[in-house]
Length: 359
Length: 87
Ligand code: SF4
Image 1 (cartoon, rainbow over the protein chains, first blue to last red):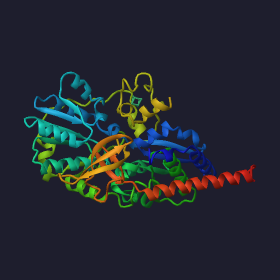
Image 2: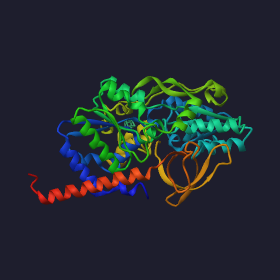
Image 3: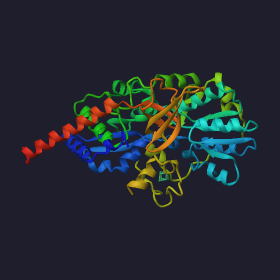
Image 4: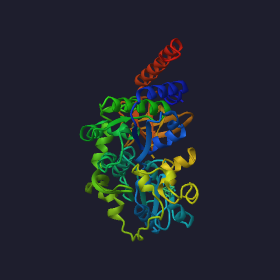
């Protein structure tokens, strides 16, 4: 496939491996923020291509992993209402809540439908005017503008039985908090698809305030090796900055129209992240102007008490202080078919990625 | 979650509330929202995520980066041939 095959070229990957080895003299720890990167890194065995000096750790960029169980609990509670149809991306369906999951509710007869896009959810709303359609809006800056577009389209098309339940979050507060909390990181492999929307500007604080480099990377092996090489060079030259490796997709200014749409519909709010706690201005709430589409404002429901699973260290893994293999439950009690924590459910969760490719 | 695939735009429809396009992903065709990409035209490659195109892929930049890497790879191979002991 064009734009993919050439970035899997083995000779180029091996050449880059040699270059990294040549360039790296001091130990360096790089965090891949994005869950999609974690998956690619494990899938292509990137850690085995790197010299001993370069260590990769995974970060908090897996939306399903960082989202609170109470979000799932509330979605479950919505699904139990007679007049509600839940529409969701497939990622959320198996995520455990405190005592149930959307999957289990669906088996019991709740009307829960997996959609490919929010526009499909709008179609369902159009066809079921007597029902309330709740769309589970989860994801970072990559996904959130689509939710904004859905709300704007609902307004233009006069669809009034459509609600978004937002768990949308933004990346930079988490990246800054990790450094602030003293997690040992020498540079960030920056999220590629988030950056197609935001551009490079959102990361400027990281070199300027914290002295760490950020290289915005694509998802193929050549991209990742090239980004690692760029970060190693920055580190060796003590020259931290924001650079774009993924130039074929990311423009420095990002996608302005998508940013405008996001800003039109959403405002920042403090939000809770697994492993990091409540981070200031890290979540996205639907603005008052669009409150009629906000499930939290419009649909009252009683939600069960929050229970977190015992023994799961998913939070520490998201913070980069532990790896999946440090968890006693990994691979025995907790597996993708019987996940205990959210890091094992999401295909881009670190535990799932390690289970699949690096057991 | 943030996964995204490159696909080629086959046709564009500007008639509804949001700008839509039919995009081919290696043989599978889907209707994708291209509202944020006023510059996107037929034949362009876009990256799509949850039914929305995020960005138009820049062919020139893609070609240049791969060519530069292939070139560098050759130069290094030559160097190694001429200097097998890395002295
Ligand atoms: S292996 Fe399972 S229980 Fe352990 S940290 Fe990962 S998700 Fe949690």
